[in-house]
Image: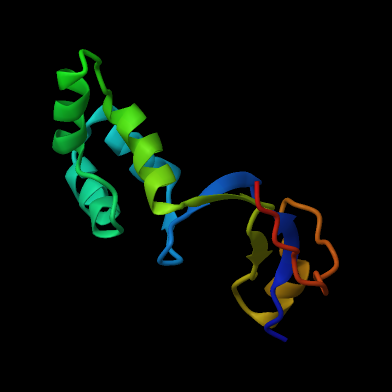
Length: 126
């Protein structure tokens, strides 16, 4: 029998869904906020979805005598493109014991095995 053991859900979190159906991960958003390596790719991805480029908005804010941080630009860009924040209940976790049949039968997993989920999750938009 190759049935995995269902161990419940991972960490619940809120995710950002972009208009093209992809997810903007928390790590990608943090790269933009802090200006880490890889931030240019994330900014280019948002500009491709019709967000105004960061240098253009920084110049506009400077003309008005205000500062615009990359984090503020990110929030404005997500609002411009119509990104949605959705509550994700956590990914399902499974474990498969390895080894011969006798070992698989008595293999300790370390977490309580739960019954398999039968219903789909409802979509929850924030």
